[in-house]
Length: 302
Length: 302
Image (cartoon, rainbow over all chains, first blue to last red; front, side, top):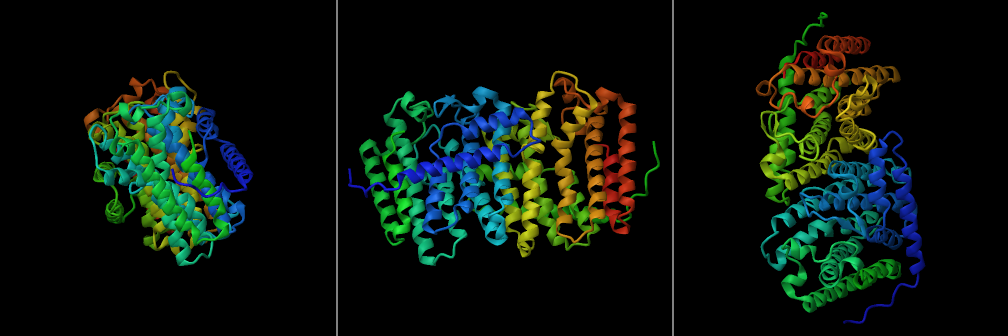
C-alpha cells in the first residue's frame, strides 16, 4: 500500500457539506406542491435515504478550488445527486440488475412496486434539470447556466451514463477485456463524477491549464471510485455493504477483481490515485478539498 | 355535430412541417457518435417510426402565430416529440400498461427487451434537454432558452406528465369521477401539449392578453386531444388504431366514454373545441395554423 497524502484537516467541512446538500435535496423534494403523494413519497425515499454523497462532495470541493460562492454549488450538487439517485432506481429494477437491497434498505421497486419505481426515476431526472433551470443564483448568469445544464444532459444521455448501463448489460455472461471494462465504467459512473467536478469550473474564469489538469484528475478519480466499488463488492459481505454482495458474480459481470485479481486491482487503484494527486499538485492549496475527497474515495470501506 | 371552421388552406405546409421535424429528429438521432449501437437502434425505432407528430405541428403553428423564424421552432418541436416518445416507451412496459403494439408495430420492449426499453426512454429524456441546450439558434438568447428548458423540465416532471401517469395507474380498477379524470389527462397529456404551444411564446414579445388566450386555447385543445383518443379507442378496432383497442377496458381504466357514454363524450369534445376556437378568435389571422391543427385533432380518425 502506498503512503497517501495527509487527510484534509477540514474534514468537519465535509460533514457540513453533506448536511448542506441534504438540506437542499429536502427542499427540492418539497418543491413539487402539485405532485401526487404517491410519487413524492418514493422520490423522498430514494433521494433522502442514506448515501455517501460523494458526487456532491466533489462538487463542493471543486467550488472551493475556484473559490465560488457555495450557493452556486448547491443546485449543481443537488442535480448530480438526483441523476445518480434516478440511475440507481432504474439499475436495480428486475429487468435490469434485479437487486432487492440498496444502502441497507429495500430498493425502490421492492418497496413501492415496479411501475412506481420506473416513474420515480423518470421524475427525478426531470427534477434534476428543473433545479438547474430555476435556481436563482445560477440564473444570474444564463450563459454559464446553460453550459452546466448542457453538460448534465450530455453525461446523463446515450453517450454517457445510459450508454454505459447498456454496455454493462450487453457484457453480462461473458468475459470482456480491461479496456472494454474501463469504457463501461468511464461511461456508467465516470462521466457523472467528472461532471460533478467540472460543472463548477464552468462558472469560474479558469485557465486552460487548470481545466486540463482538473479534467485528468476527474477522469482518474472516477475510475478509482468504480474500482473501489468492485473491490468492496468482491471482499465484503452483504451486511457491511448494504447491498447484496457478490451480486456481480451472480450476474456473471466482469469486474476489475475478476479480470486482474484482488491484489493487482488494488495496485491499479493506487496508481490511478497517485496520478490523480499529481494532477492536483499544480492546482495549489485550494485543491485541498478535492484531495480530501480523493482520499476518502480510496480509503472508504463501504 | 357542430359546424367547424373551414380547414386551413395551407394543409401542404403541415406536411412540410412533419417532414421538417422528422428531418431534425433524424439528425438528432445521428448526433450521438459515441453512443452504443444497442441504444441508438431502439432510440431510432421509437422516435423515427410512424407518428402523428401532433405536438410538433402545434409548435410550428404557434411559431407561425408569433411569426418566429422556424429555425427556433425546430429544436422545440423535436424536444417535445422526444419526451412524448420516451413516455410512450415507458408507459407500454409490462409493469405499466403492458402493451405489445403501438402505431401498428411491436412496442420497444417487445422488440428490444425490457431493460433496453427502460434505458431508451431514459436516454431520450436526456437527449430532449440536450437538444434545447445545444441548438445554435435558441442559444442566441440564453435567457429565453432557459425559460423554454425550464418549462419542459416542469411539464415532464412529478407535477406534470410523470405525476399524471402515476395518478392514472392509481386509478386503475375503480371508477373515478369526471374531475379526477380531467386532472389525470391534464397532467398526463395536457401539459406537454400545452408546452408545445406555449414554448414559442417565450421567444416572442407577446402581450399578456395574447398569452392568456393562447394558454386557454392550449388547455382546451390538450383535453380535446385526450377525449378523442378515448373515443377512438372505444369505437375502433386494433387494425385501424395501430394499438390494442379496448386496452383501457381490459385494464379497467376510467375513460370519458365509460363515464359519460359515447354521445355525451363527443358533445364534450365539441364544446371544448368551440371554446378553443373562441380563444383563438382574438389572436387574428396568424392563428390560422393553430386553427388547422385543432381541426385535425377533433376530426382525426386514428
